[in-house]
Image (cartoon, rainbow, N blue to C red; front, side, top):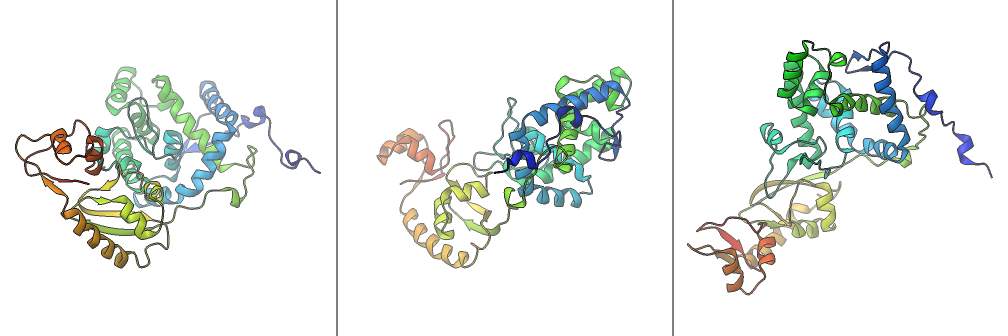
Length: 340
């Protein structure tokens, strides 16, 4: 029996860092004739190649999400090389969270995410939505590139903050990324992104021989629009589409808790599951609504969540979960609470 490893040439690590001096990122040539630049790229490429399981996951997830990211980049007129940013930021994981509470594919802080149009509240966190977060990231990167005049500086600002980068440029009297002394994390950040591009665009050369069947399938889906005067149980949507509750959460990682907020919502479900969904959901929803209307409590002045839970003989945790509230959540007279 032939050893499979002998069928594929795995380049030595030294071979992997013998660059051809024609490496570009966002149409900017990486000056590998500069020894410090060469060493910085070597370091990040070697570290990435050493973590081969992570690279394999990069490649597999890229097949699922890159086409969608590329489409959004094209709509904004941005270089496709920017698709490697969420790969380094989150490894294309929606629930990735940093020590500074940056969240989602593009690792937005709450303040920046809201500034660029993302909804972030107790019911929804659109930083975890691949489409909406990519759209927001494009708008942010366009603003940063316009401000700093270079995608390398734009990405540096994305990583370290625009005001801090402005200060460094002013003090050091240069706006050449490769000549700036920046925080180590930011210096490494750019070269990590360039390394990801090199590996994914030259997989065979770096010893990654994945077949098409090894890749994760492209993320495909149907959209359904829902509108209600009440919070809708996600479980009701899952039952209508004949899929597990978990599938709804996987397709819509931005949803928090067990209920959709009242008003209009657009939900993604697996491709083909929208057939007959509207009619089936309308019937299920009407039955559910009849039931739930008999279990609505209108908050009166002076009432607390604990008091309401005791009144209906349900646990406080059940009341909170039913209404997608936290222990510290505020209620006001006139609010409508669902009681199970």
